[in-house]
Image 1 (cartoon, rainbow, N blue to C red):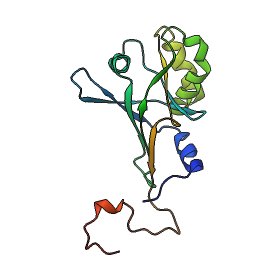
Image 2 (image 1 turned 180 degrees about the vertical axis):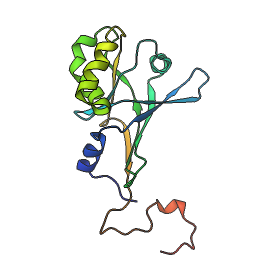
Image 3 (image 1 turned 180 degrees about the horizontal axis):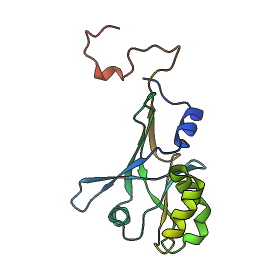
Image 4 (image 1 turned 45 degrees about the horizontal axis):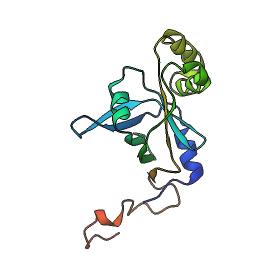
Length: 165
């Protein structure tokens, strides 16, 4: 099971259009998953809920999160993160991190679309949260690339003892 190198991981996390799914713990202790935009910067995964977002309220009660960043086309790269979300900027401090928000939006809708999106939603207070990859549990995976063995791509625990390659 090939892992992403540090460079491959950074390149993947910078890929335009790749959504992140964030799982939070709801009031009953169960998971809730939401697809959202994110930005990878300085070893952190940054993301921004609106003030009235249900998953933001859940993070305020329990900061544990699981993040799934993956793609649906070859080479099927994925980064899985388990950690705690920390507050970088509280809602209402949006002007302090506007450049990061524009960069995040530009990953998904381009520079012009990002400016328009921010202008259209400027009155919606947001928080800026992060998960530090250094302190989180991170696992990565990708399909083999040319020159790598194509069989046995999953961890050995998934195979029956008699499986041959």
